Length: 240
Image (cartoon, rainbow, N blue to C red; front, top):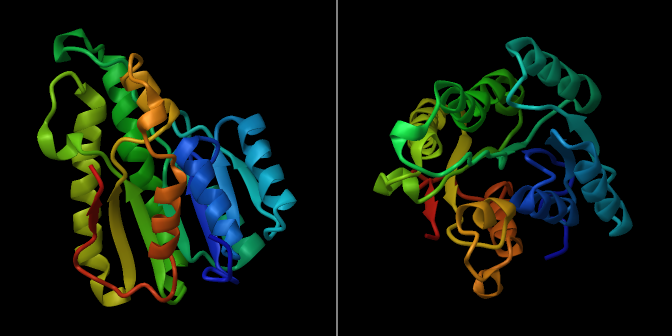
């Protein structure tokens, strides 16, 4: 995919150094978007930055932020920085995720439970809340939450990560209903099995060769952020 589907649009991607996040960032840039790369590991973000520039995409921006330790003030500062530097935000893609260790609920410490719910649910809420006024100012804007099939199955041993994804889907549905009159599209996107670091941690014995690359999902997500995307109540896209 290469073209101008997202020309003159500003898109912020969390977890931009990860498997899906990096693919989404590069695809959006290939379609003309200026991408804000948000993540906690600067070398990974720099690698995505260099790939975008080498491919001739608009110069992206790097915004280092560790969601596990970020405060509400950090999110407010981020929103102010985006408005000051770019003046607009047309899309927000929540790719950042932390799996933790899979196992019985009885083995999960309180600290790990709180961390996983914070990174996978509370952080997306806080970031969305602070960026929403800017997103709502832009015509045909969109928010994409990356979810997981475990949010619909209540699968054993997926613990705090699974609970967080259940909550994230609930948050997305509530937000979609609230924003319907403001013409901000909200999508829940469940990519299903794919080659990614998170998948490898969850299924270490699995042969990844037969799984699709994140690129195919990145293309679908980029389309969801296009101004040509028709607003719809069917905001859950499930590839599981």
